[in-house]
Length: 253
Image: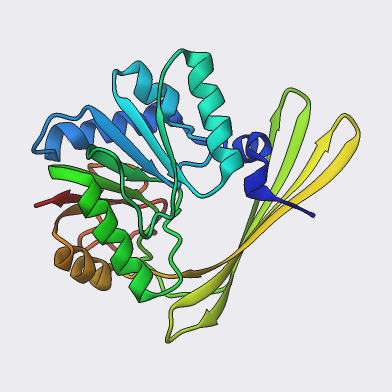
């Protein structure tokens, strides 16, 4: 069985259900409302195949990506070259990294905040704070857990150019006290009558709202807000509605 993150092309197909231009519009709306500084340099943490890179570059932003997978970074580099742009890509751990120059806006997508314990969580926000210019925003997608840990399963199918990718995603509770769970993502690929299976398993720590506020405040961030389903008119403050793909926004003091 091959590693999912070593195969960025199939990963890109698997998660291509997103409205990337629409998501970038929401990011720009957040910048317009809440950033205290002009935004020129955008950092994506856990960038993977950098799905937002093209939209951001076309809008005139400089793109900086950070990931641990050399295959993902090479895929992103090739995409940038095809677009005729220079980008900055770093192979570093999102929980302890340093950039050559600070950025004005940082993003992390699809719950990609991969921490295993509280020390890594604190170090992550310290690293992001160090990377951001004062007044810059940190935009987080699906990284705060608004319900208690539980075993979950989900699946969907995506197709592109005759390639079918069946995706399954599951979480399994490991320890309530440590707030840890095991995440498994599996891709079953059918391409030209040939089948292939990719899988990635990770041990992760859940992040609940109150500790998110406490830790980010201690690491020099001002809490701006959190909203449901990528909608900046749908605040999660005091809501009892079902939470789907929540976004959270912080600002560096």
